[in-house]
Amino acid sequence: MKARLTLLLLVALAVLAPAATAARQVTLAEIEEEVMCTVCGTLLQLSESPQAQREKVFISRLIAEGKSEEQIKDALVAEYGNEVLALPQGSGFSLSAYVVPIVAFLLAAIALAFGVARWRGAGSRGRDETSDRPRGPSGEEADRLDADLARYDL
Amino acid sequence: MSVRSSIAVLSVGAVIGLLVFGLVSKGSAGVTVGDPAPDAPLPRLEGDGTESLADYRGRWVLVNFWASWCIPCREEAPALERFQQQHGGPQFTVVGIDTRDLSDDGREFVRQYGLSYPQLRDGDGDAGDDFGTTGVPENYLVDPAGKVRLLVRGPVSEEYLSEEVAPLLPKGES
Image (cartoon, rainbow over all chains, first blue to last red):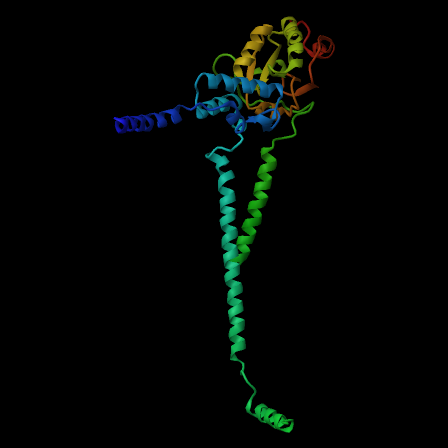
């Protein structure tokens, strides 16, 4: 009986949990972090200007109507234009705000890789050149060295 | 030109291009007296469709930038409406531009103050940027040729309207 009850509870949780997550309503604080006060040019959460106050009232009304985050942002864009969004949209020219840093990073990484490769190539060439040199003294030098050592041999 | 030089030139060109784009997209410094008034089409605040200041060529137009959240705009609105009642007609009109405002708030403002002159909507503030507005309210008197003849940053009073604007309008306007 106990096992059956536990199983029933688990099934209920599995069914209800995703529904509860989907129905979770966005809060004013969450939206305020992602939209701008268009008059002040700051995040809405940082502004108390009269325009910002009206914007907050507008968002609160949409939240009370059960609108999703996306619907609220769409409504704000319809009223104030794209400038109301704190993060650029992922389309059109605004896409460059995301693409340019990635491309710049990749280019910098490629340039760095090339630079390192060239540096290492130059280093190994330098080592090769030094390895061509005779490691020990030449025959004449060796004879003189032996003679000197013999002279000082104690 | 070597590949390395081409890449360097392209990189410098791209940086300069981005800087120029940034400067251009910041918009102009705005209009001053004697400049042509910007006339990009704007949606009507009430009803469908768009209107442009170019549609008013041949008439004197007092362009009034306002917003419902702007307290000086509330003080100014009755004076503008009275001036429109006295002088509005085939040769002159006030045109309101509700800027950076919620459309419902703007429509409520128009109803509250009984404003009878045409109202356009500038939700994203682009029209205000074209004019170079620094806030609201701001007023621009545009002549029949579309050039700015007077510019007032801040609210206009009945005295200003009667002493500075009315004398410029054609006699016999009613």
